[in-house]
Picture 1 (cartoon, rainbow, N blue to C red):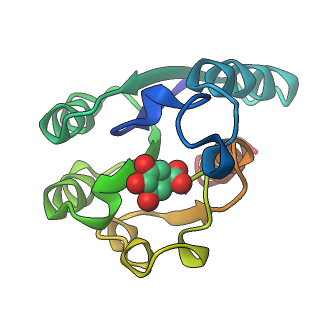
Picture 2: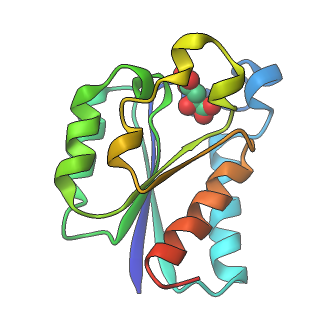
Length: 148
Ligand code: DQA
């Protein structure tokens, strides 16, 4: 069974109470539970693990630690999306596929959110579908891994 890591960056621990008009009322725990359910319902034969941090370095460490452990990563880097060359370099270095996901539509918001530092290093980007962005990310990654 292949392992998929679902990685979340800064402020995503506050989902459900954080700017609900933009990010909705679904919590990160709800999203994680839903992903487990989808993986089971679709018989994807993957083991899901989860990690969230508000710290850029901890996210880079987690990407490094996942080398040799996971088949791929679903990653919402939060605001580091727009600023972090270090995360981009980590994604480029690790060798497994990373699918970038965002709850909100980055292209329908402020100008600075239209730029993703990490996108070029990722297998693809899903943005704008609320919690379903994670579900779609899981399906995309499962497809890349030959599991869907
Ligand atoms: C986000 C979009 C980012 O611009 C923002 O900084 C976030 C959340 C999203 O999921 O829509 O923290 O990544």
